[in-house]
Length: 131
Picture: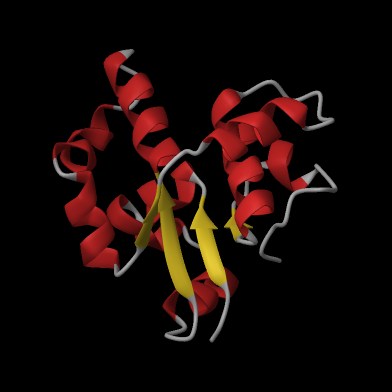
């Protein structure tokens, strides 16, 4: 079995709406049948908040049926657990974005590799980033 890949929200948006933005090195990892993509409730939460604020109108079709998006991608779904919440709060990290903190906490807690190009996350040494 390959690696379980937790997608950061921008990667999910790119895969579904603008696949040309995905670097070829990530495309190889994401398309490897040995690897398993994982979508988090955090992705839906982040898109929903930003969509409601008018900052992410393109997320509407993804939010309309988020489980179907996961199914189309062959991705597993990951809920937010109390262990994730506690880990997110305990991270020794100055970055305060709750979505980023929760995704990193989920990756650490569940042994996942986080797929992201977000410099805030990639600069955090403890984050288990797919490189």
